[in-house]
Length: 450
Ligand code: AMP
Image (cartoon, rainbow, N blue to C red):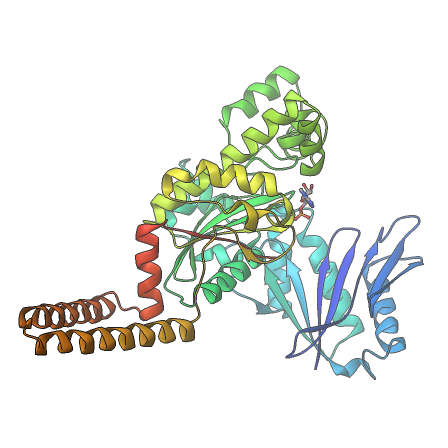
């Protein structure tokens, strides 16, 4: 069964076709400069990347060409083979807490939320409408960046401003990057082998956000009404004294739109370094002794550390920290700086393991034994204990009775305590061993998830 995922921007359309349920990517690509001069598209198929110039007047035209490519490349025999199209939508407001079918009524709601995401939601609506026109028989669904954060409680999503602002103007925290936080947290749970976990997921890319996730449910996240909240980012300022905005609007005599541009596009790493919003350029700048780059990087890492520490307290501990997105997956330096800053919480980076880019890996030097391995280890331990007991018995025959009684009683007590702890803590053997390990070595497993 072929399923298509699309991400419509104001002048672009990214796509991937999957063979389901295997999730094999059949073809992927992007249409660019839609509605502009010099529009073109690139497709990646069988490891080959092809670029074609084409007039793309609107999203519908892009969809039509996409369908032609799917037919020509024999991804589908007919458009009816495409069973579903999933659309990425940035803002779902308080309406959407999960992926939903894009019915007429739901499309209306997405459109209504445009004031909260003026660059993204109107583009998504265009994409959905184009897809319905071109592939009317496919199920159309919307996956929202905000949906995963809808479980956040009122005390965490409200701002301490007049209460009516939320009621009347929908001013509250919605968060973003929800699909990413959801995926990496469930992947981390798979790695840990359990689901009753406390996780802190760090999506650190050009846009950056951190979420606190308990038992698979998001309890807090760093982005807010808009993505310009929480962490310092590539070109966004993130959290700061709100009065700076009004003070500087008066000082610079600038309009709200101009201030939006400064805070979203000229701040963050770019604003402080004065060089670039790209973390690779910042790292290169640091290597040649650029002090402003060094300062930007320090501030960038500081905000990540602060948020992780805050969520550690909010979660009441933490089983794992996850890094993902461009910087999280690739910047060895940023991960090291952040984890070093968290050493007080018991995080200990494994320098060798951290020396990687774009691969999934545990980077705190923690070895997760498989359940089978733990079982084997327990059996070996039991056999050894039996052998020792047998040897002691021989000694007993020689008259040292007291040793056997002590050894047997001790083994019995240890086993009873072990079983009781496993029962009380509702864990299995592996989790019990991990629990002990954490107490002894450090509380957290940190993974790079791509
Ligand atoms: P994203 O928004 O997730 O695409 O991430 C973009 C960010 O990832 C940019 O700041 C890039 O500099 C950063 N990035 C990508 N590759 C690397 C790398 N190898 N080392 C450091 N940063 C990287």
